Image 1 (cartoon, rainbow, N blue to C red):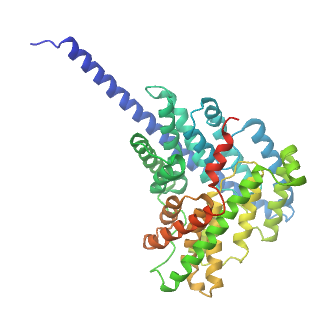
Image 2: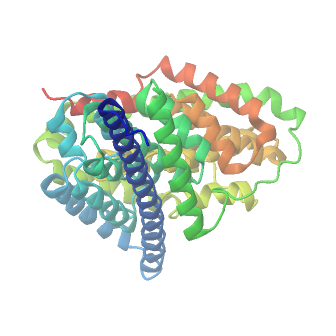
Image 3: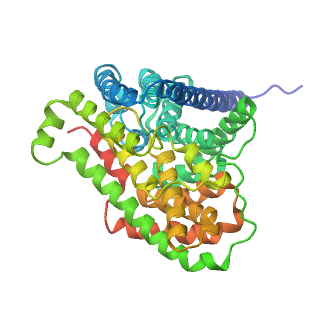
Length: 436
């Protein structure tokens, strides 16, 4: 029997070591994806129960919004600034910055587990206080934090390249699990988080997206986010309106982004000094604005906006013409308060209201559902300037594959219009976290 030579022993040992490290890395990624899916489900459960509790509270007296929103926003803004710095806002800008930068210390601060826990709890509390808050953007940040934390068990530690891959994969898994849209998770990673895509990152993101989606489905069942809107065929009467809705929603989405960026950079005059010198009190003032808008609209602007958008798409409900603008104003007020607050779900709801309004204005009420779907895609693309993500998310959430071409046209046109008005929202906000 021929004994192996020293080079052969070394080669076999190296091969076994690499194989062990390969499987260890896979197991870590699988564990992270499983945790992200479970966290997304838990976050959704908290958010739903917070909104249900708010409805029960409001049924006992109309004065509650004027107490909950201002006082609650003050408390949540103070907690965010004092204990959970980095959890403010959407969470997508933080994830983009952490994925793209080479600076280690800012990334470590933004990717602390405490930040993810605070983001979930404070966002749910914000919904209880009446804020217009989406949970999908925050779930992106939570997913990135979980994946980043799992990096300590990777074979080669937490290298810069490996950190980028994990954050990207975790963020993609977060959006996929939150919306139950696996394809959108991959597209979101390509288009919004990285703006470039290496082969290793693509495989990691795809694995994380699939596993997070499987866990989410296993816990809550397979579902379509906005139900199953009935659009038997694309009506010919809708074609002329697609361009108009795309331009209008792109314009309004770009205006929203421009206002958000300008306000966060500093309001003019006495408001600006108030915002800078008394941020907690300013959050309370934002709560007053949110309460006023909700009271004027009969409570339509509370919560994520999911129920209102679904009522348009599947319930045959015609919301008032002012719903879309009012929801946008409530979302802006909530975001400017500095509490954890996502923009994706409220933006989809605003778009649904604007699309329905366009159908009613054109005296085509029978086209309210397809027009609302077009509006959702256009407004989301206008706010995010991410056309691929926008039309894929809307298509997957509504299962309207027959509307692929109108959605693609809408997303592209709305993005082009938005770029004439505003720089990209999330990318611009991400630069705020760079060391000065």
